[in-house]
Amino acid sequence: MGDPETGSHVNGSKRQLVKSLNRQKKPLFQSWFQLLLLLCLVLFVLCYTLSSSYVPRWDFPEQFKRFLYQIHQVHLTTQPSTVPSTVPSTVAPTGIHYHQAYPHNYHFIMDNTEVCKTKNPFLVLMVPVAPNDVAARDAIRQTWANNSLVQGKVVLTLFMLGLSNRDNAEQLQEKLKQENLQHSDLIQSDFMDSYLNLTIKTMVIMDWLATHCTTAAYAMKIDSDMFLNIDNLVTMLQKPDIPKQNYLTGMLMWNRPVVRSKNSKWYVPEEMYPDPIYPTYTLGMGYVFSNDLPAEFVAISKLIKPFNIEDAYIGICMKKLGLAPTSPPDPSQFRAYNTGYNRCEYSKTITYILGSAQQLVQYWTDLKKPGPSC
Ligand SMILES: *[C@@H]1O[C@H](CO)[C@@H](O)[C@H](O)[C@H]1NC(C)=O
Ligand SMILES: *[C@@H]1O[C@H](CO)[C@@H](O)[C@H](O)[C@H]1NC(C)=O
Image 1 (cartoon, rainbow, N blue to C red):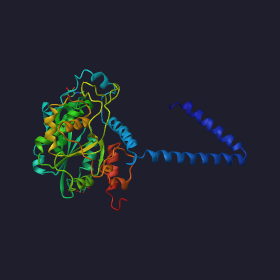
Image 2 (cartoon, rainbow, N blue to C red):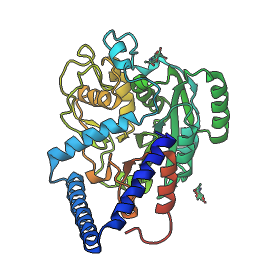
Image 3 (tube, rainbow, N blue to C red):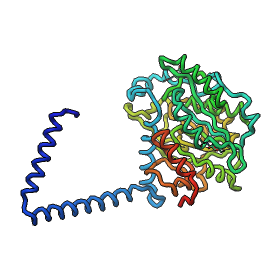
Image 4 (cartoon, rainbow, N blue to C red):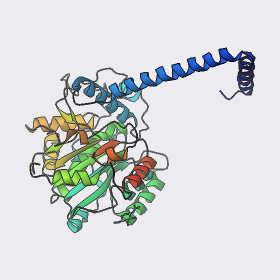
């Protein structure tokens, strides 16, 4: 609290403490100081052992998975969302507000029809983003979307948005049109853009890829709060053993229990998805797939009841298609946790979850500085 009286009281007692310390004889002061030093040392050692045991490693699979699950939740809460946390419990049981994920129920407002024909990309990065989040889009345009040619391969980045439900929706729509005139990188569909509609957003991405960009070899769904080492991704996709069809990879989630607690943001009622465990899926922050899959996802989604967990929904589509996600060649390259910027580490990974658009620009600028990364 910013109460000035509290402040002066604290200052007063601090002053008294200083006075009483000054009054102490010297030997006592020294032992105080030594005690403090010892305490600091103990704290430091404690923190160090704790933090190093929390750093997930492949030799601790259970702990690793638990850690990831937590991160998954942290990640989801950082989604730009205006939905209050009570919404799932009031809305979900009736199912009324969940809409068919089948994307042909929706229509494109902006579709950049020709962009794939003119650019002929090898890889398309599809970024779901809130309509008003121009800061995230600009940061991405300056960083991993800046170069359309990566190791001689054409990479195209597009942003996927729905309709804003805010009061200033009309003004915002006008701004979006201008933004698209300038950058030609917005794809917009007429569903309402909200947290609970993320599965619709993903399926509209799949629909766009299947109808407007069939010539691309690979695509990635990547969230707008991500760091992406695009060079490493293109390198990975060019490895000879990477399948060209029926391929889905990213950070794999195994045996994830369905959240049945009604107060949770990830609550899914049994009528939407009866099994207690999700099939193996790839974490929604960023998953990569061969571009034959979008048409398959769109077709199979007609048969699968939609629910709001988009990454698990894609996992269910895969299972219904008789397919399963594949581990990436180096699983440590798809990271959900972020323990702070480290140039060497960032030069080796593919994905990282970030806290802000500024972080993306900062880290990217540092990574691209000349000089060795490690
Ligand atoms: C984008 O890439 C070009 C080189 O292709 C470079 O000259 C330019 O500085 C980059 N822009 C930003 C904002 O980093
Ligand atoms: C999802 O989108 C549909 C179609 O635009 C809309 O009617 C519905 O209200 C949206 N649901 C939520 C929870 O935002």
